[in-house]
Structures are given as structure tokens and as C-alpha cells.
Length: 354
Image (cartoon, rainbow, N blue to C red):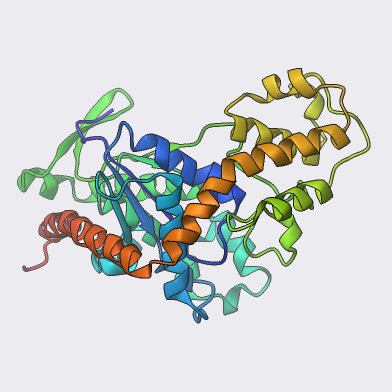
């Protein structure tokens, strides 16, 4: 608990086609939260060069993510939609956070280990420092809540660690500058500048897995297009991919406990539940005891019903890049105004001349 005004921030990287996991794990939450919260939604293009420096069409990818935001129902007039590189303060605050964070914290990040692989010495410094930039993205706007997939939980914990260390290290200066805000830390109330951001991780599909391997997360980078449902796929492609999705020979169980040890079955039931706005238990009440030959067509029909309108609107918006660019320009200016105030405060706290 704190006296910070509630604010939501989250972002999506412009790398490859968005897929069902991005929609269920993030974008659909973005849309729901805007009904009750002050929201900033960002195309995090600075993050996109951490693992791949050169992109064939980065501008096109940025516009595509923005089109997906708008097509899914995010309102860029009531809230802020922008791309990260328009606001230089993201990189500026990230440098300060690089000096707050510890190397040991970064070395423990699971995603760095996964993305760097065996050749860690050849990974970019940006990839190692990625969580520090993510913390800057969030705390630049003093966001109190971040909707994320389960795979980003560790990075949110590091964001909280950075905020706590900054607040503690500069506590006297924060107080002297009159910039402190009461933060409840256990039984103690302390003054801090940055909020201790809360992750929003909920729902039946917080981590959508590959259609070809239930042990792997659905990913844009998977070499097999059959492993994912892209938001640009048409009805025929969606049906074909679900039909070919890996399963096991047994019928669906009647209770959620029966999904244990059946990763592919659990994944497909979770996708159905998320698309239908139901629990897994409710899905199994309808389909328990039935074979996948009956379940898969129902899942395909549901996926098409939910995704087809979004796909159509994405295509329409993508054909009007000037409109998308205008949305991003307006959002960047509004985000920049908030960021400018934060950076003035941070520079005062750290002790830089202004």
C-alpha cells in the first residue's frame, strides 16, 4: 500500500508476429485494465535490439504492434500508446539504474541465461542489462501495477529491488527535496520516490505454451510456424494449426487434477478457458471424457470467433501507417511530459546540476 496514484504500464517488443500467447498473456489484460486505471502501453523498441541489432523492417514491426494494441481495443485518446525510443528518458533512467542494480542480480536472471545460451561471453551488454531498462520503463512513470505473463515475474521482482535500493540509498535526499511518498513496507511506513510496483499475473493462460511442445513457451522465434497461432493468421490457418497441435491419446479428464502430467492437454484446455472467459474446471465439465477429435474443432471455432475481428482491424490499420504514426507521436509527447518531471526529480535526488 502507498499514496502513489494508481498507474499501469506495460510493453511489447516489436520482434516478429504477435501470437496468441501475447494476446492472452498481455494485450487482452491491457484492454480490460484501461476501463478502471490510468494506463501507458508501450512498444518497447529499445529492447528489440538487445539480442538482434539489425532488423529488416523495425519501423514496420513497431507499427504492427501498435495496430494490434488498437485493434484489440486499447483507446489511445483516453490512455497513452507510444514507442519507447521516442522518449529518451527511458535510456537516461536506465543508466542510473545500471548503477543501482548489482551484477549478481543480473546474472541470476533466467531469461538472460536462456537467451545467451552457452556462449554468454558473446551476448550483448544490452541483453544482460535488459531488466534494468525494463525497470526504467516502469518506474519512469512511477507505475504501481504491471500486467505481465508469468515469465516476466522475475524481472518485476528486480524492478522492485531497484526501487527499494534507490529509495533506501537516497532516503535523506528524497526527504530533503520534499519528494517522498509514504510506502507501506511490512509493518513500517517509509518515504520513497519510486513505488514498489505490483505485477498483475492472473487468468487461465498466463503462460501459453507451444502447440508442438507443451514444455516450451509459445514464441515468435520458434522455427516452426505450427507452434503458434499468429494474430495475422486467417480462419483456415488457425483451424489447421489447432488440428495439428500435439496431444496425447487419452480423452480429456473430467477434473483439473487429471491434467497433471499432460502438458499439451493442459495447454489446450487453458487456451480454451482463456478465450471463453471460463475456468479450466468449467471447460472440462463440458468436454471431460471426450476425445481431442471433438475438442479441437470446438477450440478452433472459438479461436476464430475471438481473433478474426482483431485480425481484420489490424489489417485495416496497417494499411494506414500515417494514422499509426500520429497515434505514436501524440502518445510519445504525452509520455515525455510525465518522464520529464520524473527525470527532474531523479536528477535532484542524485545530485546532478540542472
